[in-house]
Every structure is written in structure tokens, then in C-alpha cells.
Length: 209
Image 1: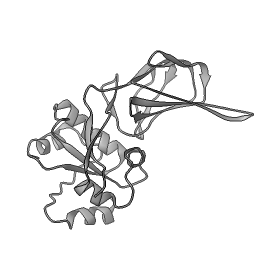
Image 2: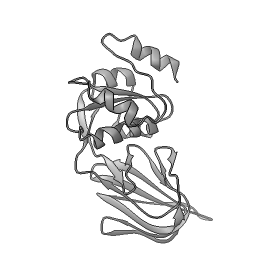
Image 3: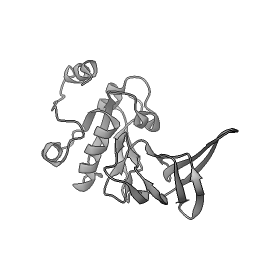
Image 4: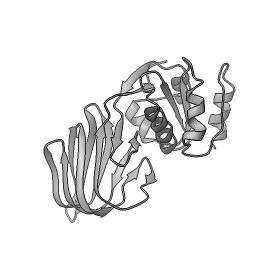
């Protein structure tokens, strides 16, 4: 727990605080979703904690009605993607609401920040465009305006080469790999993997206070 950030939230008027375990699931999150009303939900934690909460919002079909704020307790890919600068607490509690693409995977999860795949050999597509064929050093995927931003990385004796693609989905057929989603390692190796834009966006607090 980041005690300074926790204090910043609890000292604000009108803020109800509930402490839960890391990457909370249905028993911890769903009862709170049922009592939100028109209040926004602020997550204090890691990108993985935020993803766990967003997953429950999606599963409960509440993406259109719940506004999510985020106060990270460590370095966060999400805040950079959302364009939040300065006082993250103030933005989470009072920032303007905007919609951002919500990215899912074909294993039933969501991606709110950074998806990572290490060195592998296979075939990857971003929509209908061939992203790579053969061996790559790494693949990084983040939510983007169209759905996903895909960075294919090759490292060699001549340095690092990067190819960036934008689309609604990224699909990979590969030798067994273990994807990392928002800092969380997938529990088993996969030979096929897809990240794709959900049909409904996520409503977040990220605008100017």
C-alpha cells in the first residue's frame, strides 16, 4: 500500500474507501458496483489492480454507466496512455470524463496498459496486415485510438528495429509463449493469442480538472 496516496484519498470529503486484496475479484468488486449510483469508482493500486476491477465492470455490463478513476501506487503504463499529468488524485476524483478503447484477450481478460510477449517465432497480424513472420525479440501491445497499438521489436548486432502498427486487433500464432498483461504473467503457455477491441469503450476520468 502506498500510504501517502491512500491518505490523499481518505482525507478528501465525500470519498468512501474500501481496502481489498491485490487484483480483486467478483466477491470484492461486484458488491461495490451495485452501490455506486452516479458516483465514480477510483482504483488505488497497480495497472493489474485496475485491470481486475475493469474486468468486473465489463462482466457486469456496466461500462456505459461507471466512470473509473485511477491513482497508481507504482510506475504505470496506464497514466501515460490516458495522458494524465500532475495530480493523479485530483484527476481521478474530479477530472473530465472521456472514453478510451477497452482491449480484451481471447482468454477472457482485459488489457488496460501494456501487454508483452517475449522472444518467439511465429506469425502475427494486426487486422489484415502481416506484422511479422519468423523470429522476433519482443512484441508490445497497448490500447490505442483504433483499438490496439502493436510494436514489433527486433534486436540484433546492428541495434534495435521497431515496427509499429495500429488496428482493431492483433493475432499471433507462435511457439509456446507466456503473455504478460499489465504486469501479470499469464498462468500457462499459449500457442495462439489475440488482443482485440471490445465493442464498448471504458469511461475514465482523465481530463483537465
